[in-house]
Length: 100
Image (cartoon, rainbow, N blue to C red):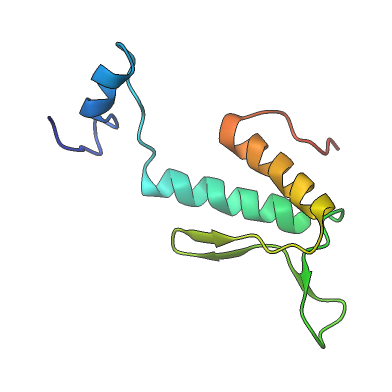
């Protein structure tokens, strides 16, 4: 079993488990760029209401990020559906659920 090498960007153990394919391990910088873009997309989506902070109307929280932790607070099933749409966009590279 090999060790992780940032220059190689592959996991040696993944080679045997995926029948000849190689799994790419994203770098911390890649994670940061993508998670920041995801948070910006969710925060900028006016159809997502987020979680309203008591006493601070009309301020609401849609995404909270710290290091590699992400919290996506919501108050409705509709928000959850929209957030799931954005997660699909960034997880598998599907087209935006809200074009334009």
